[in-house]
Length: 283
Image 1 (cartoon, rainbow, N blue to C red):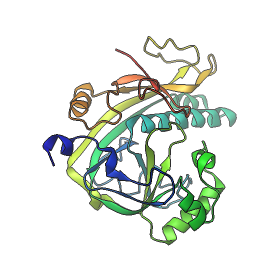
Image 2 (cartoon, one colour):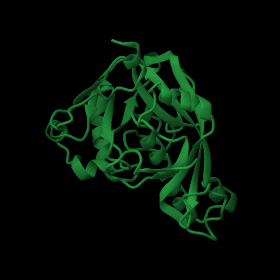
Image 3 (tube, helix red, strand yellow):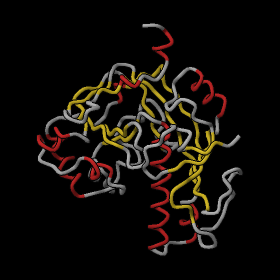
Image 4 (tube, rainbow, N blue to C red):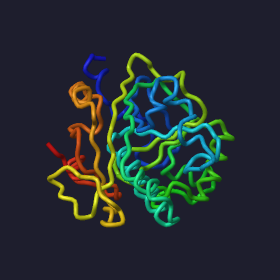
């Protein structure tokens, strides 16, 4: 294998039936994963240990309270869009509960870590969006139900139990935000699969924007009480621009051509030109 191919993102490193028939899946050796996480869970020994912010008393799509779980993806834009969407939903929840002003304002902007890293092969994964899952696990979750937009949904609880009981290591599932590429959830602690020498961590600033945001200008701080928050787009900026550009040049970043800052659409669509139609770039 030539050195350029070994360095760059390879779509075939994520093995699942793209015909959506069989559910058996795996990640090949040296595949690249992306995780948008907190500033305190961004090191090789914490990135896949399942004890990040989701290991709490909250439950999510494929975890119950206190279960070891890690959510990541094979697409940076998917990760950005997912987190921005949940920032927006968290803001709505805080507004609906009439939370304190400081807590509500804290939901408007977040500093996160974008972690780009390679892993050793991981087998025994499940491809969710296929006929095999419907038949073998007697579930209705495929097609439209597989992109249920909220973080939790009762039908996923039964699948979570079934997958873990059968010793599955994780799940490929379609993002509720973008129709390109996949989200990935890994069960238990997979720290031994992280290739430490090929691990990169960059800071990213995420921000909700007003619905009248000028997409040719940087967003500014605003109050969600004075202006309405944009329900389908948010802003991101890779703070450490030069390392990001170096990774992009070396082919580590999927999708290719992703700008270092811009506005991201977090409504699920199948874009004709990706990521150009999903991201409004800023200079």
